[in-house]
Length: 157
Image 1 (cartoon, rainbow, N blue to C red):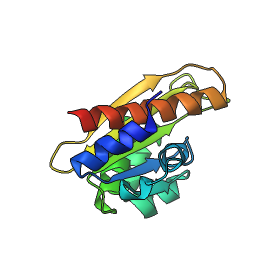
Image 2: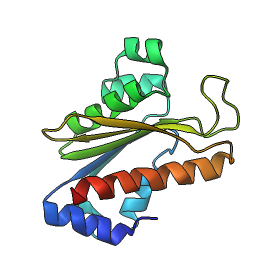
Image 3: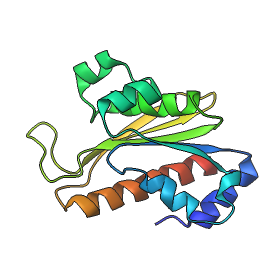
Image 4: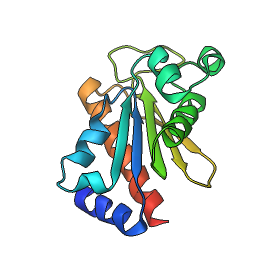
């Protein structure tokens, strides 16, 4: 797991504010970041967009993207991250959308989580991680930790 204080220091030194756009983690990334005193100098805001409607209204995710790819897709994760960046004063945004479980389908199994990372002046990066059917809490924790790792890596580059 990423050292939160070190991550915040890295962002502070880089002069970068962070925004989050979370679905299946329901704000866990923002909570982890803001557990550290002084986080307000680095954490600009967090969006919890659990429903498709929230993704559309709060982040500007296009309905046709949701219709074509579903909420759990790299395409939606990219639009979530870009929307969080555009709708905040942040220079770096991470997004998470996935199936924490229980359930899923043959095409979108439990434990599949898509991530987006948007940074001013750079193309949005996306990736999908298959965490597997380890249970809702474990998938959510793994997704949170992965998103924090993405932020860590982005701030080190």
